[in-house]
Every structure is written in C-alpha cells, then in structure tokens.
Length: 141
Image (cartoon, rainbow, N blue to C red; front, side, top):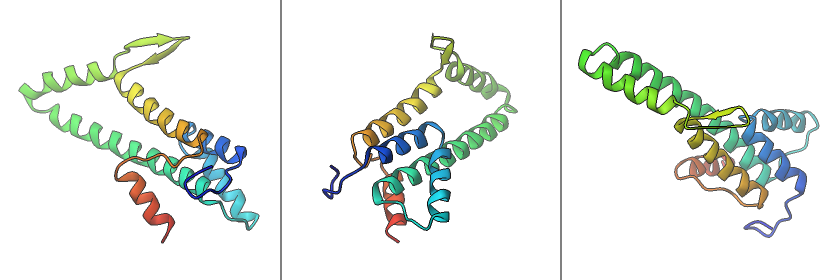
C-alpha cells in the first residue's frame, strides 16, 4: 500500500523499475500505449514514469554542461592540469564486476537509480529534493 491506501499492482511496480533502468524509455512507451488505448496512468505509475524521464533528461543536460565547462577550463594553462586530473579520477574504473566497469560517476548514477527503483518496488513515492517537488507540482496541475 502507498500513502493514500490505494492498491499498487505488481505490473505498475515492474514498469516503474524498468522505466528507471532504461532511462525512461519503458515508461514513455507505456505512456504512449496508454494514450492510444485512452486509459490514463494511475498516480503511482505516472509519478515514477515522469520521474524517470525527468532524471534521464536532467542527467543528460548536466553531463553536457560539465563537458562544456571542462572544455572551456581546458584552455586555461594552470587550471588545465587540475581539470584533467579530476576528470580522469571521476571516470577511472574503481572496480569491475563480471566485465562491467564502475567509476565514481557511474556508481553515483546507478546508486540513484537503485534508490528510486527500490522505492518503486516497495510501492512508495521515492523522494529527491527539488525533483520530487517539480514532478508533484506538474502531476497535479
């Protein structure tokens, strides 16, 4: 049960989790199918689908902005070495499991996705400061 004592179906939980780990693609496809079938998404699934799409867009924008900043800082001679060191450190593999390589950035991103997915599996509305408020505001508008 969730906060409103509404039953959350297992299929909704599965779609929510798949939506997070496919960067919102599964949720977007499900949303399109629901629109064509003229049935709305229930609040729980709509929240997690919108959250996954918003998170994926936000991660893309932040990564592109960081690339731009790093490229600009790369032209400053003294700062160039520091930026290069930090960039290499953030992208270097910390450990590998079954051929999968994990850097600091990937651990943070996958940790975030895991947190959101566990919340979805438990039937809860996972909370992230600012982002959850944006999603809630737009859902009730």
